[in-house]
Length: 313
Ligand SMILES: [Mg+2]
Image (tube, rainbow, N blue to C red; front, side, top):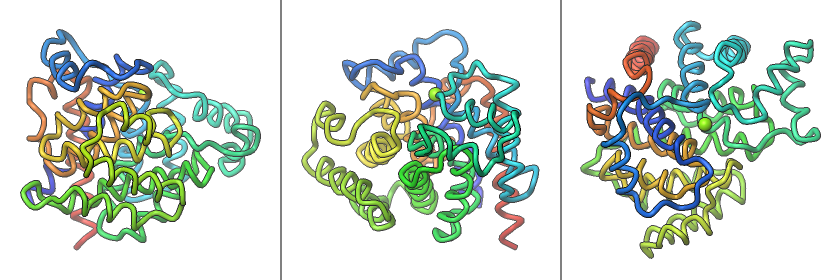
């Protein structure tokens, strides 16, 4: 099962690579080309620092490893403590507001529901941190949906915020169970589409299949799927970016970042799926070495793998 070990590490490293590379382009319009991003990655001197996407993914992994499974309250506190230690990671407005409310005495149940005038958040913050859950619970899509729903609701209670995380987790789980040589991107998109329970996602994933068949230009991909912070304007986009570039994990990340917009998060989500298919060897060592804390992130992947193995037997 060596292959599965490298896939676990690959999904977490893919998150960090997409996030760290995309962070420099967050808020940009579409870039000249995906190869522009690859060239930037090759030529960059120094450390590529990650943002909230990877920081929260690390927190989710740490909690699963420490509790040897999913414990919502432990995970919530871990995410809050990690934020308080490193609040400079470019967090969006939602999670820090939830953490401040909890520190002032509001319950973990109530705090996220109060966001955005009582509507709850449908941002992509639950989807961007979901990889460790997808790795540990990939064997049962039923259980995965349940666990991801609960974990998402630590900060994102709106059904569309939760559903984005569930679909991102499904995409990672499918990728983990597939091999590059037998992978079919249209079947993959269809399988994710079949899993959704929300109309807006079903429509986006059906559009993604058409865009893939029609070899659509990047501008049309952005126009039809979106590249902004709402989960429904970014999770299906990441799933598409991976499907279109499934043969190379680095190409998938570069393509995702080249769309501009919420480039670090779309890069992170794309990297998580692509890394789960190709494993760590899908990423050039000279790029992995530039990523901040890459050895620790790889170690979290190995520990999650050991945990998954021990829970199986
Ligand atoms: Mg970020």
